[in-house]
Length: 287
Image 1: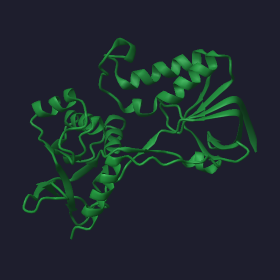
Image 2 (image 1 turned 180 degrees about the horizontal axis):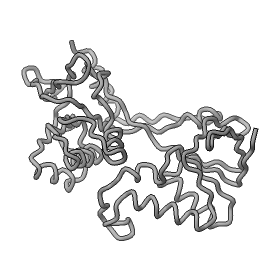
Image 3 (image 1 turned 45 degrees about the vertical axis):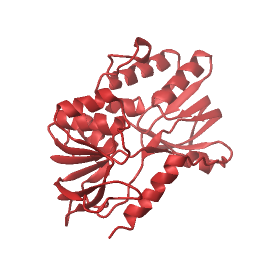
């Protein structure tokens, strides 16, 4: 089996991985960063909107361009970047299994940085396994990378920045967003993103959630309801015609490789996460 070596191997070439590659390579280390995607920058390659804030934080620059900038910065310092390559195993001796250009390699390093990113959280409800229910990030990938609409009439669950931004991008791509639902009493994302949706006539319903998705072979209707204590308020449920439900309900870190090499984990359960779990259990037990 072929072998690759480096002083430092970075698993993941998103923004964190590329910044780590730049810093380590600039300090003189032999750096190899590996990412399974075909484009650099992780989530940045799906970000077609311009960032805002300060010049130091790339205000006015579109996300995918920032990804290319970080790639160029790291490579100029001598870091090697392997895209479309997969680290499938991290073993107790800190060797790694790597697939690159359809060939198997053993990858060895003195130090390893895991910057594997996160996966979208799932929200269980009746009908949540129907075709047409997907993560907001998956919908964003379809639209911004593959130029494919996930559906024509969409209900977005979650009003964090992901839910708000993806909703607006779906409208730009030609879809209709019927509503944005938020279980909390207030939106979770920036007001500037919410204002764009409101100007486009898209309702943002706080203290609301999805109860069920209806359809035989795919989503055709979505039942929603207002939330109170301890759960959905009786008599507030209504049905929205929709063929897609996008879930923007947070992210969880991808920790599989750290588990494989024996890292110890400490779980920190915040109060609002506990409340969310209790709410999910109530929704799951609805008829």
